[in-house]
Image (cartoon, rainbow, N blue to C red; front, side, top):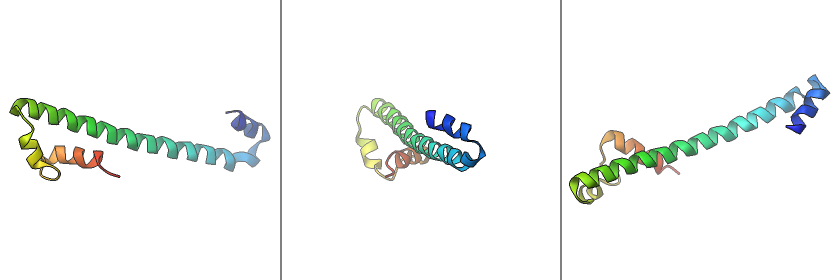
Amino acid sequence: MIQFMAWVREGSATYALRKQLFEDRKAAVEEEMRQFEKTLAMIRFKCWYYETATRDGNEDGISAMLPDQLPPKIQKLYDLAHES
């Protein structure tokens, strides 16, 4: 913030520097959001997992579906959570 304010005082010659500062911050926030989306997908998958295991009384049915035979909505969550 101190650097940004110094650039503001310097005037229009620092527009590119200021823009780059915001571009860098935007990229960092977008990456954080991607990580949060993966985490949320894993949490949603695990909620489904344990709801199903509780209903079934075991994990056998779920284990038989892993890793690529899950219900479509759940498969999307599983795949997103396990992206590298």
